[in-house]
Each structure stands twice: as C-alpha cells, then as structure tokens.
Length: 128
Image 1 (cartoon, rainbow, N blue to C red):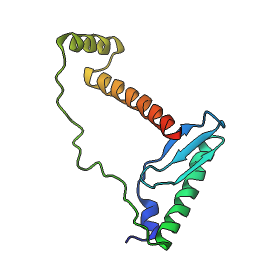
Image 2 (tube, helix red, strand yellow):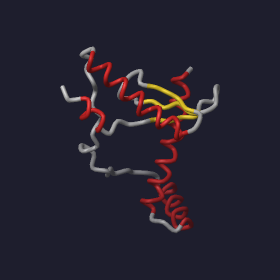
Image 3 (cartoon, rainbow, N blue to C red):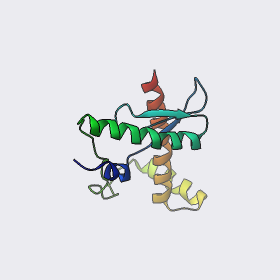
Image 4 (cartoon, rainbow, N blue to C red):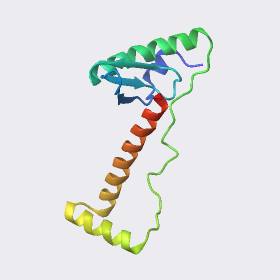
C-alpha cells in the first residue's frame, strides 16, 4: 500500500458539475467512491474537494480499504482510424476550412464538445 502522501500526489480525476437544485457546484472524484463535496463557487468546490479527498484517503488507509489508483493514459496512443460517409467527410472538410483549422483539429473540437455535453447529462442522471 502506498503512503497517504503518495496517494495525495496522484492525478485523480476531479469532476465538477453545477448543482441545479441547490445552486453552486458539486465536486467528486469518480475513482474514489463516495468522495463528494460541494461549494457555492467553482473555486470553493475545488478547495473543498481537496479536503474531501484528504479525509477520504485517510479514512480508507485507517480502515484498510483498497484505494483505486487513477487510470493511466499510457496505454492510449491518441490516434484511431475512422471511416465515414463521403458526404460527412466533405461537410467536415468545408466546416474546418471556414473555421481556419485543420480537419483533424476541428474533429477533435467537435468530439471534445460532445463528450463534455454527454458527461454533464450522465452526471445529472446519476444524481437522480
């Protein structure tokens, strides 16, 4: 088992979503089940999340609970091949040209934007 300090330095993913019912923001570490807090502002939620992570890790170590380490991105190359219809390829090429960026950059932007939107919807559904 690692030390408390080693766990605190690990890059655990922090998720922050708006709290639509109470206002403010909800912060959680998905890899640390039940490690969740909130704040009236994003800054406050981040500060509170560090305190919550600290207390969560201390309790887990004290109670000999297995602590999951953050998922590594080392096994991902950052590349994949995608086949798409010619009409979609044409549309993406034209749109990226209008934006003044490469088609690759434009597709990454669209994927990231959609992924962020999807994660927000999933997070809201988990709260219900």
